[in-house]
Image (cartoon, rainbow, N blue to C red; front, side, top):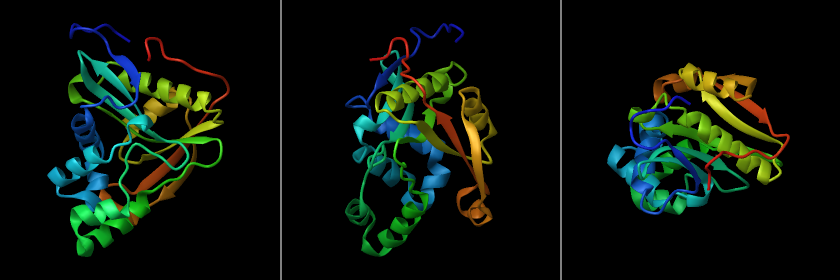
Length: 210
């Protein structure tokens, strides 16, 4: 990674730091609001819902000058970074409007197979893009997978995000299946989803992680 003149470089940490829930929720919303918005809008309510139900132990973050500059969420077993069950959705949005939102959230749900870690996505603040933070986060997630004896990391990338797909390919992810989803283009802004795998063969680590 090229050095920058913005203070210290990024430090990768496991877990969402206490007190940074709103910032992480805002990052996720900026990156994935078009997709999540159909189920969680309006934006202020959505960001508050995400912040209130984050599972701190299912994310890795990059911290620059004391602030979270990037986050990668993942699922192991039945727990992912983005929490909140049916009762929480109904409590926030009301029974009548909440039922439809639950159906949309179920459509986006992905469960890991045995020996698999599923990534929920990477989000980096605009001012820190291009500084290698996405690569640092990917390496740390792979290290988490190795330590949990996972055979592979799985993620999905949409057709309108070729930059993310190129990043994943540079880190050893291989496309295994593409599902055409034209029915989601108007609703969520994309028309195809590609599933990618990265094999995990040995323990990995990121220098400076803790």
